[in-house]
Length: 401
Image 1 (tube, rainbow, N blue to C red):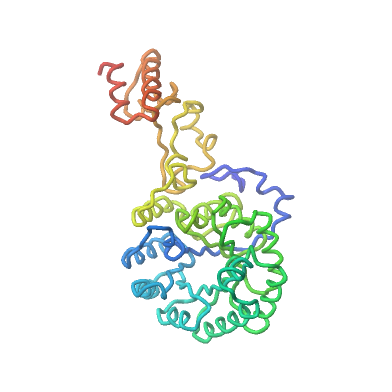
Image 2: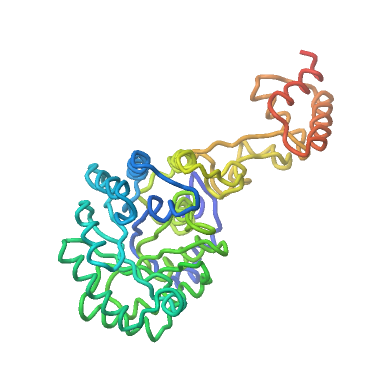
């Protein structure tokens, strides 16, 4: 009988589901996935998605099962506005949103594109107010109320996005949300870690505190400057956030946004959420975004990289085919990837035997020992893994056929 932590496609820690752990969480009934690749992801230095690429990515995201697509910011360029317009009218299942500053002109541009809703940004963090925008707290409150009302008047769903939330002062957040909720409540509010500087525990605390101040759903949008993007997003979910933001492959400025593929898999495998996303398409979507963005993935990128499913170490090779979840936390095919055995310094007899069996070959123990010896020598000499041609040359030299 399968357990929540041991499914056909993964075997994770059972302690994720231990009663004392779950009792500390305030998990929502369901999670909405909001993709920001076309807007925040494009802020990666050097990345430019042309109109046809944006439409293609939006269609891929829709086929993947993403709930909401942030199609861009109309004010950036005429081509961006046209792309948003085409995506909004493409007949997608996903709800299409645009990003807007708290300005009537921006909101009108978004509405004119035909989007379902807007992500309405305004600064809230003390460093932003003090050194970048030079706005008073009263100005932030009045601008917010005006902008939310104008967006509602244009028939738009409003996700209020007080960015740099994790560096805002608590007394200001209480006053801001009290005024906004009393005078023009948005449809949801995003808790934004713009600089990726909150710990998971701090994010959980902040979400719980804000939930006491408002009566609308909370969303979470985090960045990965200190490598905590996925962790802080999950912490927000544990505290009750209902919408998760992210970008495919963790694209975004500086160290990037939270990697959406990591969050989605974690929500299914580690928490037991039944997501709308087709996990088996994650690998293909990742590679298509790589091609369009011109940004290669790190080999060891979690979930969609190549190294997580590449095996050079010989240890455990004898169980890899019979019980792969003894080695991997989840099967490569879960995300549309496949396992690859490569030859190099760490190669063992089991690796060579499996590789030969894949090729329909047999060898004696002595021949396998000889192949292993030569593979190790070449792997050390070249400081890397062998190419298929190099391995074939060694095999042919030992087997003589």
